[in-house]
Amino acid sequence: MNEIENRDPVIEIVCFTDPYCTWCWGSEPILGKVEETYGRQVEISYRMGGLVEDITVFSDPANRIGGDDWYRQVADHWVEASHRHGMPVDEQVFYDLEDEFESTYPASIAFEAARLQGEEQGKRYLRSLRVAAAAERRAIHRLNVQLELASDIGLDLNRFRGDIESGAAERAFQEDLAECRARGVRGFPSYLIRGENGHEVLLRGYIPFETFETWFEEFAGGELIRNEMVFGLTPVHDFIARKGKTAAKELSVVFDARLPEVGRFLENLAEKGILHEQEAGNGYLYSTSRSESACDPAGGLAHRALEGMRER
Image (cartoon, rainbow, N blue to C red; front, top):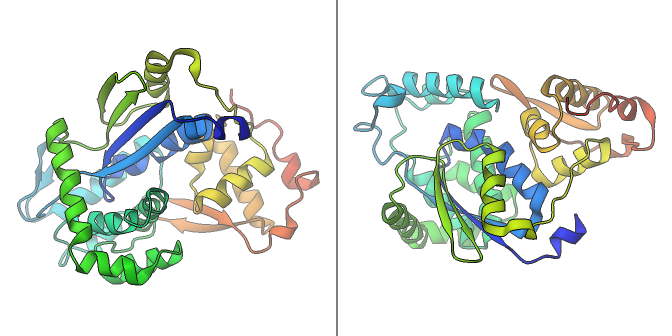
């Protein structure tokens, strides 16, 4: 990946999103593949869209959400979406939050507080928010949870809390909302893709990787260099080490590997202590283990398990 990491950005993607949006969570594998395939040539940034300002008046007829039973409806929507996008969800979080959840705005403002410490810090924090809400049943609207997640990724906690309490993070959030309105963005995820020549397109909804490729070719021609991902013990381990808690679906998409075989491969590594496996609602997440000295890319059962895992 060194060659593409040394290249300047050619394409910009602005992602309009919300920490609670299940289809945004479901798009993580696709954006991960964009990042791994093109590196710094494609610059990704995020804008908060404010999915739910007030749950008591929120209405989404297309997904049958609205009214006093919103928590059941959202939970059902998450499960239905998970069956389609393949990322794990724990819908019970909404039953936990039935009597206290009001808005997705606090989590979005927390993202802004993280981004005020740097674009990359914001991206890492958004990933943590998504994992915590979607797969770990954590109440990311609560300040104590937001602070825990900020601590986990090494943010300056005094600055983080200060930017929330001073209103600096909320002002940044309002700027994002204004950009959404100016662009006519009402659903999430949405993506503004912009080329160096100034050409741009706004894509709405869950977008497959191939659609991104089509627009990259349209805007950049043959200028982009691809990093071809090869499924193997070391690349998978390195990806998880960089990404943090990772679902099998993400590895399947990024490495073009069959999902059932990826699942068996990860279970094998977890059994050997190379990876840590945690339950995540209707699936699992994997992270690097403290016993990484057990990992031997040159041989052993884990290495041999790679055979036959190439994409059909």
